[in-house]
Image (cartoon, rainbow, N blue to C red; front, side):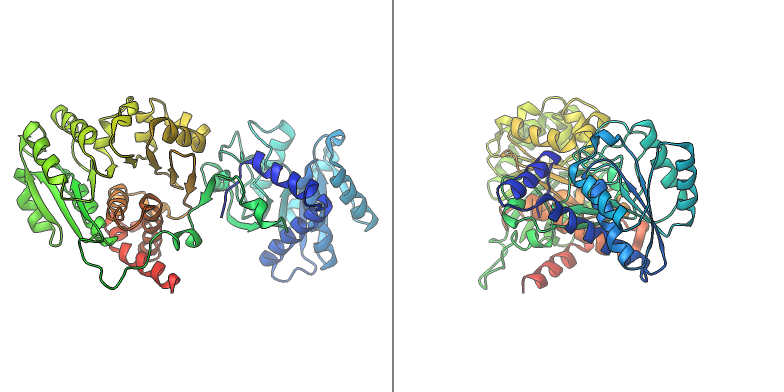
Length: 515
């Protein structure tokens, strides 16, 4: 499924109306009907229940009034409150207001203290609230009257159905100003929006329901360069294995990782590569730590490397050995727990800039390019970078707060400018390709905020490098799915090892869906 920017959704609406002949009121009818259905799912038995409808002056308000009509026909007690400049009301909203008045349903305009007092009483006795105040065009800060309304709604702790995006959430970034509606459920129209997946706004969305409202399918696919990483996409990413498969044909992966005090990162990354189906994984580690890994790891082979100090690899001998070794592997992952000694950083740069193999750079390998990601353009092949937002900010010489303001477009431009594939890890991981394509994963959960989960993801991606040309997307999907499986059992007590140990289960679930 595609993800639309607000301007793209407006263009889709325009084409549906002007080129395909769909009537704007017909689209509004479909939208309002879907919203009414969502309300009924919460109410269970809608007859004689009370619903408060908050409508703005745009078409979101019109959608809300359509929902009011359907709910009224089901016996719901409807109270409608309108906010916004009456001179800015759309023609379609005015049509819906006329229909509502003909039905004998009163519309209160929030212009007087008396109207606000009535609203407070209504909210207290409502079973559900519909948020049709602002839509995808909102950016910046809420007007004082709307901010007052948002805070009033949030204070009720009543179920809220938001139309398209919760009021106060920016559709293209997920940014929130002083406040935003805390929705129980958001019914988004046509396609999902970026703000549904990125925090802080994503935390206000609640359950996300997506409805095409009858827009022709081709309009929802054409010329849109953001895609959800979901089951439908995942089924196209990893081909079934042929009968004559062997360990050499599904990937020989070299992992360069680990240092004194950071053996866990190396173990997690290398084992994760195996658990996503790689045929053979070799872990290159500091010589003095090799015995630890030989005890800790059974299926992963180890290769001891020369050290510059105890537990730290670096220097020309290590570089030469790694370059020679890499010739026998299909892909190389470098960085998890590697350390940040100057000799190690120099080694990383020499390997990354010399090696002619598919490369995954994680953790300390990314640190080597802080503020100088431009240097990665020298890579023989397009590298895959797997930063969390703190590491991404350091790479791009900015701050996490600045990144958050327009995260998707920043990552897209970075991938294009620096000729690299970025896997930006956050609440909804973003995969950006140099051709401008963006993939966003809604998978994963709050329990995965634990040390080592990033090492598991890097290893999962590396393990898939020979199996599919879409390893970054497939790795993100399997990692998120494995995390959800682990969360169902362990909740917030899960560890990175729990995620790693469920990668095979995630792969199995995908294989079942293929059949």
